[in-house]
Length: 373
Image 1 (cartoon, rainbow, N blue to C red):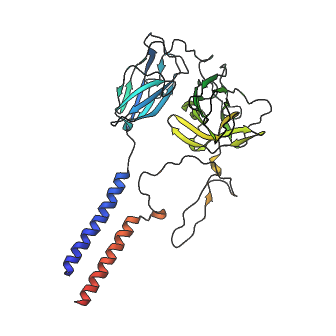
Image 2 (cartoon, rainbow, N blue to C red):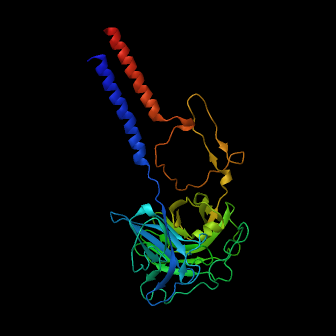
Image 3 (tube, one colour):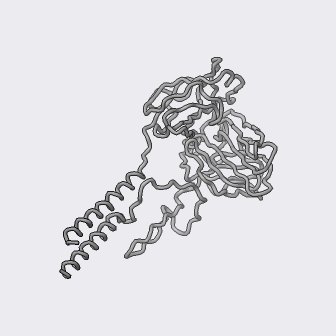
C-alpha cells in the first residue's frame, strides 16, 4: 500500500471519529419544548364551579400512547384556574412531552375533563368541564385557602388563616393507599402510603401546630407537617410519597434539592433518605418502618460541599460554599443525569484528545514507511 493510500485511509478514519463523536453529542441533547400555558373557568357539567383548594392536574400523552403528569395548579378563586394577566399563575406544561393533554381533578387519576386538547406551545384560555356531580359535594376551605407564613416563614409553618386541619382516610388496596388533602393548612396536597402485604386503611391529618412536647426539627426549617397513621410493615420498609403544592414551595422560596422528609420517632426527628420522585408536581419519597408525625423541611444549602475532580498535573481540594470545617453531608436526593457528554474539568474534551492521538499514530506510520522505502 502506498503512502498516499495510507494517508487517505487515515484521514477517512479521523473524519469518522470526529463525526461520530459529534453525532453522539447531538443525539444526547434533548432540550425541553416551549411551554404551553393554560387558564380559564372550571366547573362540572351541572354548572357547579370548582371550589377553592381544588387541584387541577395536566396529563400528557405522546405519539406512542405513553402518559405522564406534567403539571398542576390549585384553584384560588372558585370556578377559575389561573388568570389572563402576564403576572397571573397559569398551568404550564412542557409542550415537548406529548401531542395532547387532558386534565384531572385532585389527582392524576381523578375525574377527567370532558375533552382532550392538542399540546402546542403558547398561552391558551381553556375552559374546563368535568363530569356531572364532580363538584357537587366539594367544600371550599373555611377561609379560602392557605395563608402566608410571613416574612421568612419560620417555625410553625402551618399557618393557614382561619382554615381548619383536614383529616382524610383511604383503604389500602394491595398494600397501597393515596390520601388526597386540600391545600389549606400544610401545603400537602396528597400522601401515598405503600405497606407491602398490609390491609386496613391509611389516615393522614394535617397539623396546624406540632403536638405537645414535640420540638421543631433541628435539621432545617419546617415547611409542612402531617400525621400519618397506617399499619406498620411486617416485612421490609414502607414507603411514603408526599406531594407539596407549588404555592407552598414558592412561599418559602425552596428548592427541591434542599427539601427533606423527617419522621418523629423515639423522642426526636429522624431524617429519611429522601428522593425527589417528581418535580411537577413536586413529590418527595422516603422509606420508613413505622408511622407517626412527618414533616417536610428545608435544609441550609450553604453547608453543602462540592468536591472538585483532580486534574492531571495537580490536585485541588474541595471548598465549602460558605462555611469552613467539615459539614454534615446532606441526605440523598435525586440527581438529574446530564443530557450530553460532559467535558473534562478544566475545559479538556476527550474527543479532540482522541483525534490528536489518531493523527499522531498516522504521522508515525508515514514516517516509518518512508524510511523503509
